[in-house]
Length: 456
Ligand code: GLU
Image (cartoon, rainbow, N blue to C red; front, top):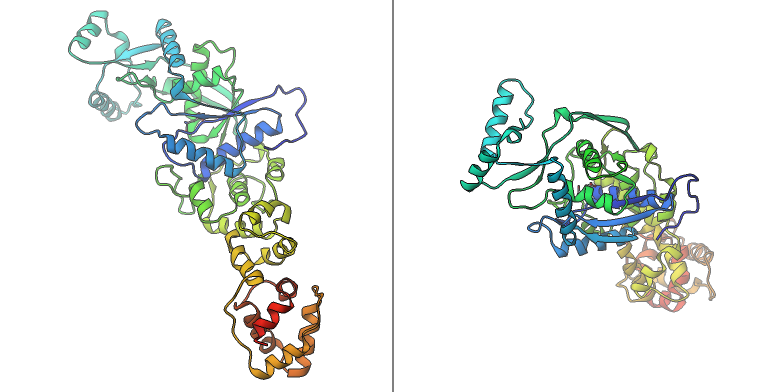
């Protein structure tokens, strides 16, 4: 959990929410939304709610919901509160009833085919393909006749023909003319709810003050502002729409394909802080760069820095960033992870400082730990070389100067220098062609192992 000291004075504690539908695992684009909300809440001393939009019983699963919680935890996002929409149908039913009574939710009977035909005709005539509200002029008898013939209504929200304006937290002055929108369907024929009504009911009920989400929801905002009002809200929340992350191929990300899922990135060994930095800084005026902690990244947070252009990012850049993050991590911030690999004891910290700069993925520490503490298949030196190296090996205790003193002496006795000197020694001591500075590794390997590996 992140605590940032500075609360903005005169700003009531905000309530924000991240509202994924558990129909897949979240990807780095969803992480952008989650982190921006989380940072916003922390910066202003507010609350962050995790809400599962799981009214679609067919596509939502418990596994995905639990998986998303794991993903958020890995990212360092800890919700102050969480709930599921599937437990709150009574609230949505009550809201729908009120809207019906107020004449804002009206029954429609057109089949998808009929709607499609209308749409084509409108387009052919050069008219905007907006629902013509034919259902509003049905008489009670006509409705009864349709129902007797077996048709079930779906329910549309009657929009006021007005221009809805809001001062978007990211995009600034925004407006949408609702006269150009179709009255949105809120309730399907089978009585199930589309996303809009439950979302607004919950935002209202849970006191959400700021809705920060992707710009694919801009049009929804006009509808939702009207719905907040129709449901009796004194004022709609503030809205902020951030640009969407798109892949290097210019394609948007999808929960369905699993591409760039947080779970997948974690399994591939990408560092959390690289994912978080990439997710929040890409497409902003702050350059993507390695950070050392989530609070450091949260401290950079500024909705005003987010650009209006789409945020293109590259998987290769993410991999490179992950390595740069890894190379800069302090021992304290990885101590638990090292312990989990049984890398403990007095050598653990100098070991980490010696090898971190050579890691591609954190998991590679296990291999270097075995070089220091375990057995390695090494390559023997030639006899003369071995004899010279063994004779010159200084007594312990060793420090980072021991390697230099030793190799200097070996050079003098064997006449070898440069690669001819260092490469066989590295192979003999580590069994690897390249790796961390031997000046740092040597004291960790220790004299007994060095002698054994030299074949002495
Ligand atoms: N469940 C919606 C989504 O995943 C939430 C959108 C919103 O934040 O209002 O897109």
